[in-house]
Amino acid sequence: MIILEFNFDDNIEFNHNGKLYKLRRRNFNKVLNLISKSILYKGVDYNGYTTIHNSVFNSGYTGYQAYLDYLVKYEYIKRDYYEVGVRPYGYRFTEFFKSQIEVNRIIYRTKPRTTQKRIQKFNEDVCIKEHINDRLIEDFMDASKSVVYYPRKKQIEKTKDEWGRYFDIKKWLSNNIKLHKWKKEYLIYKWSKNRLYTNFTFLSSHIRANNILLNNEKIVEFDIRSSFPLMLALYCLDVSPDLIYDYDFESYCSSILTGQFYSKLTQGLNNIRNITKGNHESDISNRFLSKNEAKILFQMYVNGNSKKTHYLNGLRTDINRYMEIYYPQIHLLLLNLKESGEKPFTVLAKIESQIIFDIVEELYLEYDDIRILTCHDAIYVPASFESETDIIWNKHMDRLKSRLPSEISDANNSPADINGVECGDEYLEIEEWDYEG
Image (cartoon, rainbow, N blue to C red; front, side, top):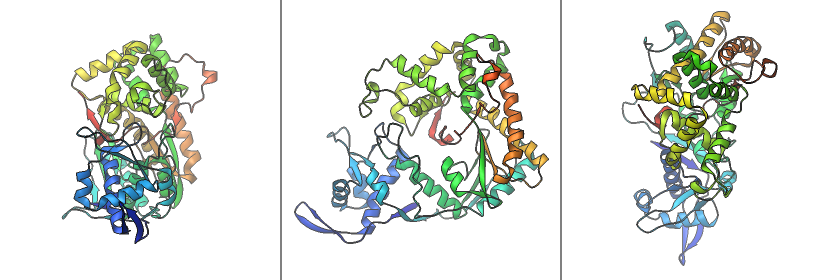
């Protein structure tokens, strides 16, 4: 159980329905925790609202209405529409909340007999050698000793949604909670679906960069841009080598190498949907998709429906149609993979992990004193090893690049074109998907 303590004053006087109340800090915390947890577990709609039934508030605190009205009146939260018997109110936090509120303390209460350390032992199903896994555990434990956490420091970068419509508190709350748990030594190191999951991978990229040290140094990131589109291309080449001569496949690979894949996807999806309205607050069926929403739709194309962005689940036909029109051979191969009973996520994650851990292995062999953390499609090293890592990383990226056909000349394509900064934030965690066979 997690309890967030916010920095509200105590005994705030507030006139509610003709009666003067003294609002207590502990009750503000009850109401705000109910809203926060609903956002964390249910996600939000396309305007950032999470619907919460009155019975949920009643279960936490029967006198909640005065507190909700105070928070709405003074614009700490916004409340949208209500339909009798159809829809409860939706709630979202505001920019004013962001500027005023801090988390003073986080209380994390585990269930009885809950172990603080879940360090998975090596097994032969993972895609690395045992001694490499042992080194990674050692480096993870080293990082765990130097987690930097400031409860009063507002790390709220990257919390606006892409259209700038609302403050996405879910990221901020999630990062605060996960960083706090790591600081309190609730450790996670486990393998699932060919991926390594640790406390580190559950953080957003800007939180990793600002709060995690290796060898008491700032860390430097090396990661693969548009990782899963790239992994899908590599998978297609593995099962159908002649695809290298297909013009549409060449166009697909070129968009990855130039970093234009998601921009073209966004434009293509909006063209298919033939949307002419630009109203960002209107219904999803009547407005343009953002680039981030296009990314999520590609995730759905590979992984299945999303549990946290459920408002996009109805648009999966658009991404299927896009891929079928623009990249028919890729679409056919992915359909065949699903029909075979294998999960595309598992297959593509295995390819991605193999690439990353081949690089990790070479770095460990070359440098006995290097420390490394991984995050799916990325590695992080101490700043003092940046130049050494850059050489090995680019060698492996060049090798990947050489496998792909491209419409562009080599002169216009640098070795780092498939490097990027999309780790972690690009793909939702494994528990957030309904996978399809």
